[in-house]
Length: 256
Ligand code: 5RP
Image 1 (cartoon, rainbow, N blue to C red):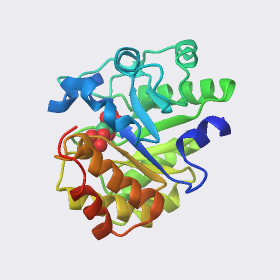
Image 2 (image 1 turned 90 degrees about the vertical axis):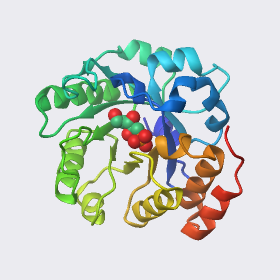
Image 3 (image 1 turned 90 degrees about the horizontal axis):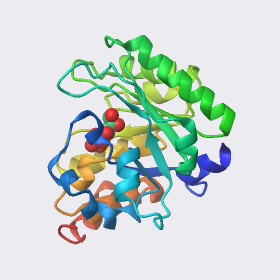
Image 4 (image 1 turned 120 degrees about the vertical axis):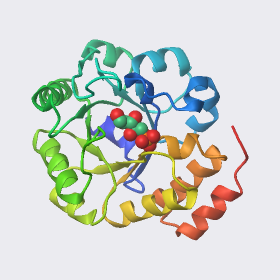
C-alpha cells in the first residue's frame, strides 16, 4: 500500500500533480478529450493519471510509466442521476492493469448517497486486502453547495470510512476542510478558468494544507497545456509564487 501510494504522492515533496482525464465516463466530454491520443505529451509531466479502464486500455501505451489511479465506478450519465453509480471493474482487473490506486465518487446528500458510500467501502476493503490505495472523490454534482462545511464533512466521512486520500473542491476557508480531514487531500480543478486564477487556486490549496491537485480541464483546455502543467508542478512541488508559475505557463509551447 505504502509503496503504491508513494508512486503518486512523491516522497521528496510530499505532494502530487495528478492529471484527471476521466470526464467521459459519465458523458462529460470536453472538446479536446475527443482526441485523447493528443494528450500523450502531457503524461510525462503528471505524477499520476486518473482515468477509466477503457481509456487506459485503448489510449495509454504500456510503455508509459505513469502511475494509474483507476476510476472503477460507472452506471450513471450526466443526462440522469449522477449518484446512481456502481462499481464496474473487478479488483482482479485493476491488479492486472497494474494500477497504483482505485477510485470512485461519493455523493453526500445525493439521491444514492448510501449506494455511493457502500461503493467506497467495497474499494477500501479490496484495497486493504491487496494493498491498493483508495481515492474518494467528493462533491460531484450540480446541486451541491461546495462550502467548507459541506466539503469538510464529505472529506471527513470518506477518511473515516478508510479512504487513503481524498479528492475534493477548493473553497473559501479551505483550511477548515484540511484540518478536519485526517487523510491527505488533493483538489479537483473544476471548469476551465483563467490560467492565473487556476494557478492561484492551486497555490491557495497547497498553502492551506492540500497535498496536491488532480486537475483536468484547466490543464488540457489551456492554450498551453504543457506550460500549464509545468506551472502547476512548480507550485505544487517547488512552492514557487503565482507570478513565477504564470511565467512558466506563458513560456510554454502553444497547443500540444
Ligand atoms: C469527477 C471527476 C472529474 O473527472 C474531475 O474532477 C475532472 O477534473 P477537472 O474538474 O479538473 O476537469 O473526478 O468525477
